Image (cartoon, rainbow, N blue to C red; front, side, top):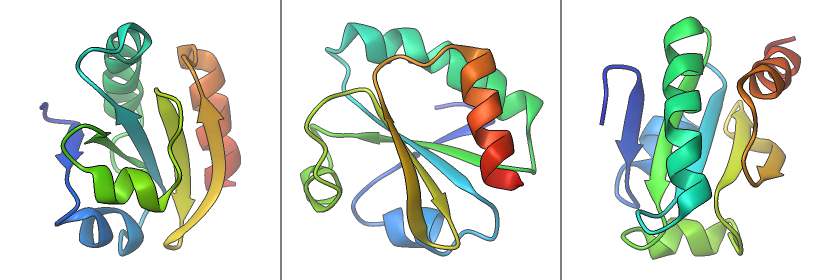
Length: 109
């Protein structure tokens, strides 16, 4: 994927997200989704800007139906914010960079 955004699967979701020692933003997406493709460079920039403070991962809903089902993902892109292994917030749809950074700052606070 990239140096800053990690692709996770059903197999490693728990290790990469639920057991992470920093807050995690999970992007539920699919290759055919236009708004998901628009979200990708925003996530990359935010991940680079906030490296070490927050972890940003992507879950392809077509390839990882178990995880998508567990979190009742009905629309994509869906961003879920995790802290201490728990989902603490959800944002559906495209999120501009500044709005995403603000939400992450709230999560870090």
